Length: 254
Image (cartoon, rainbow, N blue to C red; front, side, top):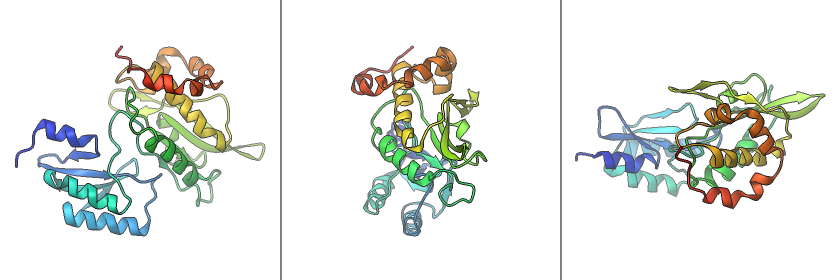
């Protein structure tokens, strides 16, 4: 068969990216903070053999890409994975899969990165999967200042730290390292408790949804309006109270 541009676009939002020089696709299977069970890995291997080339590659966002899936086999691959509780995705102008280091088990870990990543995954990657944003939105959780997960290079990056013997979280906003914008995330002036992080992330997301211009990354928005404007907006619960109103607004075209 010969695939069209419309075919390629139709599956990209479902997590399938065209393999260069072929009419086959790599399908991204999303993890929760980078964690796959032994059973999950067996399913990934079986899917790769059934529908792909037999190869699996892990991405920098801790998803697993099954390589070489023919276009007409994509629905079968999706159904097979769904039967086993695994799903393709992780593309588009929305919240991307959450990345996390092994801070839960690492001797340097200050916060429970796996638990936090799961909460963020369920609330934002799953809970806001249908929310269109100005651009992609990446969230990362790091267990300590060793910065293995590079939280400061994410739109929102959480990093475990200690102050006076208390375990807290430092939060970076607006980080990115891409083709058109290279920006170190700005550290917020407040340190947060782990349980405060989900609401904080939602405030930042809502601020971005309300004020960002289509195709503008959060870092570019912060540079445009000033970090002080963002910090003032997230210091209260106003954004959370206006959640439904903000999400009903059309995206700013600029």
